[in-house]
Image (cartoon, rainbow, N blue to C red; front, side, top):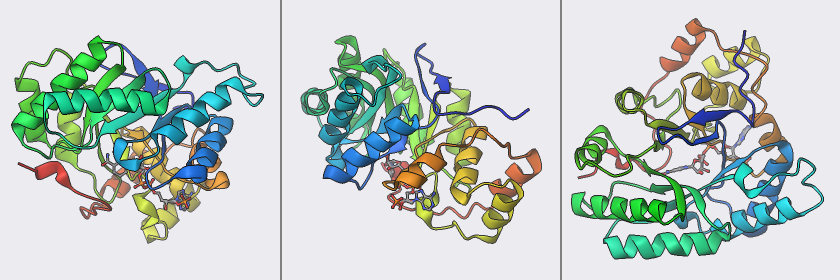
Length: 286
Ligand SMILES: NC(=O)c1ccc[n+]([C@@H]2O[C@H](COP(=O)([O-])OP(=O)(O)OC[C@H]3O[C@@H](n4cnc5c(N)ncnc54)[C@H](OP(=O)(O)O)[C@@H]3O)[C@@H](O)[C@H]2O)c1
């Protein structure tokens, strides 16, 4: 029987908490466009949002969530705890800079705390990475952040962080993963160390929607190419962050419960790997 991934399905994290299986990405959205996308996603049943200091939309995401929770559209009586908000540190430098920056993010989103806070990249070198991680740990200890994680970390960065014997090990590594860039080395390491992989650019930035294998399998499973890609991510155990500002797409991208990609077709999709990078690629940074 197909595993029922819905917008309310959750995944367990190593720290004992859990988070939704599918998050709305809000990269490259701003102002009213962000407000509309977040509102529309909440109404469609999304419970998690992936923002970042660099996206400059923490305020819009947070204020729309708060407005939704207190408004008439909130027919399910959702509370703040039912919503999961992620942000990320723009750059790694000193402990003090990171600590201050996390506090600013908490203020900016207005949500009282941040559910998941990530180091956005490994850039800055070892000293800056470890100092910034310590700032996340202190923010967790002070109740400003619930869970800490990293993004764009390669295996060597994860090994370095784990070797530092962190008080709170990273629960998440958010990296670019999709059938056209499977990053097996990193995903295997994460799975071995109980680090949940969040898949960014899960729709391949819409660059491969018409690829013959994607078209063939979408037809076979009577789904859209985007649904096929979201489902591939979920079946690998990842947490996909599909981004859209288009109402119909937001709704449809989250409707992936009705089919299951069989093992042979999962292999076929895995075989499409061409190390396609749609954004930046800091996983090998010093
Ligand atoms: N940690 C990092 O360094 C990092 C880097 C990149 C992204 N991210 C996160 O991951 C999220 C997702 O990645 P992404 O935004 O780069 O790419 P993505 O989700 O793979 O693709 C988004 C693109 O696909 C289009 N799209 C959405 N649904 C579609 C559908 N059903 N059919 C056709 N096209 C569709 C969107 O257009 P419309 O919006 O016009 O619908 C947009 O152009 C980001 O928003 C961000 O939260 C993190």
